[in-house]
Length: 117
Image 1 (tube, rainbow, N blue to C red):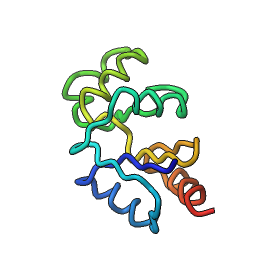
Image 2 (image 1 turned 60 degrees about the vertical axis):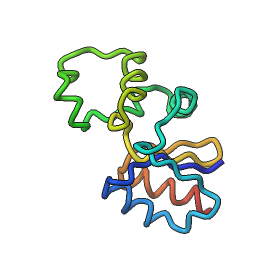
Image 3 (image 1 turned 45 degrees about the horizontal axis):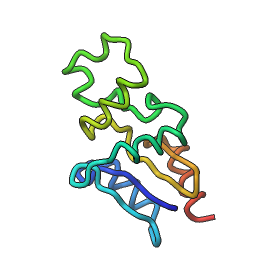
Image 4 (image 1 turned 30 degrees about the vertical axis):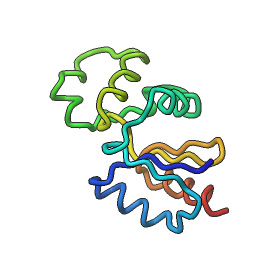
């Protein structure tokens, strides 16, 4: 399965999607208009190893809610990601049982190589 979770209004996600083209056979899920299910977040966690690996500490709500001052558990990270899409580190790219999380250059390059072997 090939799937990309992204935010349509995020210019970084848009740039990365363009860089990953062609996206033939890749399911795109825009997480604001089509929220992630608990099962989808749990599947991502299984591949990533933890909910924290999926969590964006750069999200504006992270500081606004004072979360940077708290010790968060794995369950907290899971609930926050499900509560608001901005807490997902984007994009999340799934390719045949592999996961690529975030927009780091080497992560995007690895995802590109997995999508287009």
